[in-house]
Image (tube, rainbow, N blue to C red; front, side):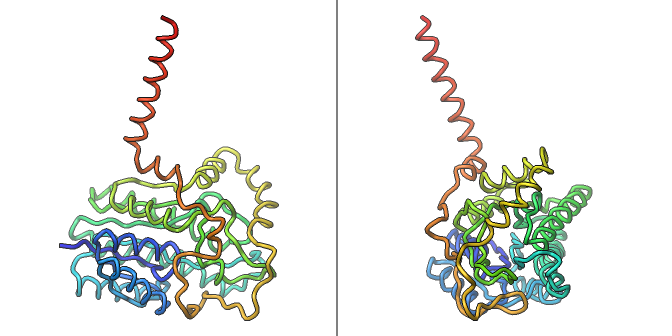
Length: 329
């Protein structure tokens, strides 16, 4: 029997790349997002790769829509094995300039969307005592940056929420696994359609990775029992640096994160954002930064191949030791 995965935010970006990867590896993939054009394109890609996809238009900010989606998926396909919470919304703007209703909406999509997805998944997984929930997080869950207060706040809230629920699962000795993947900066369409009050085009804070790097890490997290997975050296630097020198990070980002989050290009005329409704068209997994984005991460390979990395390091140490002994002899 094919395993079933639910991917929220599946119409574009990291969610799109992750849905494709699951489909290529033989999973049945339930695609949740608002944008019909992107969902239909993702479905075609999965089917072209020999997989099976179920298109479920859903606004994850609404609990009733998420619950209805989960009900439909299990009714048509049977039990859900993995639920991945990836849907998000962001606003590139200083906090004091963000309208209260916009802040609420970004928080409801990014934070409450994850809460509702987790609740729908647990409602079905707990009675069966099996299943995995993957929260797609960010290094910004630990190290917030200026100009994205709603997103940073939501990702930090997801981390706190996830830790709380994980402890509850451990208390009940549940075999349901809850994990979180903390990403670096990725080349996704969010920088084309995120709401902004800046005059210039937004961009990820470099260095930038391709979304397929995140997809591989998410797939690994879904199929291995790891508490948390950090993706990319920048994520490690941000998380560890915050733990060691948070005040220094504040001061550095007060300058670098302002100039680093936009290009010199002006916003295109008629630019639309997706805060309240999807931008029409299929936007794919990649943004406009293909020329600058890295297609792989040595850090991700090392963290997902620990035994091979340790064996290689041990072999190298033994080889160096033998060489030293021969030179002394």
